[in-house]
Amino acid sequence: MRHVIHSFLGACLASAIIPLLSSFAWTQESPSSPAPATVAKAVAPVPPPPIPVPLRPYNVAVQLAFSPSATVSASVQTHWVDEVQSLLNAWYGQMWSLQVNLDHEWSSPEEFTASATGANSPDWVDASVDKMFRVLIDDQGAGSVALCREWDQCSRSLGQTRSATIHDRRDVPRELAALIAEAFRPLVEIDVIDGGKIEGLVRAGEFPPRIDELTPVRTGDYLVPFFRHLDRKKDVRSIQFLPWTYLKVDQIERARVRTSLVSSFPNPFPASRRRMEVWALRERPTLPTTEIYVSPRGGKQNPLAGVRCEVFNERPTPEQPATDVLKLKTSRLGLITVPASSQHVVRYLQIYSGDALLARVPLIPGLVPRLELEVPDDRARLNVEGEVHLLEGELIDIVATREVLMARIRTAADQDRWPDVDRLMEDLNKLPNLKAFLSRIETLRIQSVYAAQQAKDRVAETRIERLCEKIGDSAKKHLDPVRVNDLKANIASERLKK
Image 1: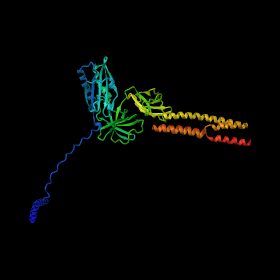
Image 2: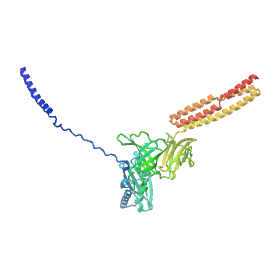
Image 3: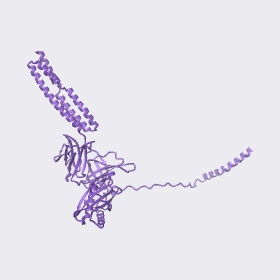
Image 4: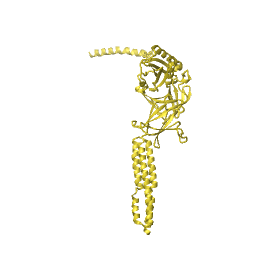
């Protein structure tokens, strides 16, 4: 029975293995047989490269809103919209991809002129366009008043409100188009920052407008730089404007501009600009003045009143001090008003505390209605300065009293009035000596330097050190104990002789 089972299993194995072996042998004998087809993998389409900045036109939207009390008919409003579209297309050509629309939502002039940036952007802003202009037209008397404001999506900022009074309705479309052109703030991408060499590319700079007066950037213009901080997905995380920093356009070659830095900081651009874009807006002042609010650093709610300020047309240097100086003082609200100048676009403001210079910043008056300037908190230095004045007064009194006592001691010794000599000598010994005076100065220095370090004010710390060192040198010079010791030795020698 067992033999029969083994025979049966052997036959089954042979019947299963022989076809496999024959298949293997056939495969080995046919090396040129085609391999089975592989499944093709889907390849993601490659996105097209971005359009270069000089060839990238602006996507522009214009909204015209008429006052509910306006006496302009709907057909005239539509005609004006078409005329504005036609004029701007003729002026800017390929630089703008333009769409002008009629907006039936009215905003009050107060709401319209209120500033807003970033998350507080106005309701009328369309984030899908690069530039958006909103124009309000209202009837006033025999004419019309137009207000225009630009929103820039790259910087997420509003430009200043432009206004125009139009007396002839036939001129309304052209005046509105001119107002929009005046409010336009061209963009420049800063792509070269190498020491003092700063260059950029004007957006749509290869598409010059058909009117020379509308050239986006000219030599002598000033640019306001800002940073666009990006996340890993290249989405904008935040916008940061550089305070008290401008770029002056020195040279233009087609779409490339070369600039020079005007800033209160020696190097405002970081060396590492990973996930960061540097752009700039061309700005031109239109306001007559700019108001500046001055406050101590870390205390915006505490205005600095009665602070001496000076405004220069040129940056003063030790070799060439400025002669034309506008002297101002902050009000009790910490405000000063700096007028704009057509001859000197950039002016330089210096803030003083006593004779100490607290801040020196460049500014363009008329660019914005209000600026805020935080200066170092000078209270620690002022406290030290007051204490030093008191110490100087005491030092003068001590030196004068000592000289009088020494003279009276010599006179009494010459007249052999030794009881008077002993009494006057006791008064001389009671005067503060150099060691005690220096101890008071050191205590003042340690306390004041610690206060400046807590406020992270290295400038105040240096000034405090200098003040204490100065009064210390005066004390060492005038309270030198050598003269008193010589007097005591001479008096003792004369007493022994007599």
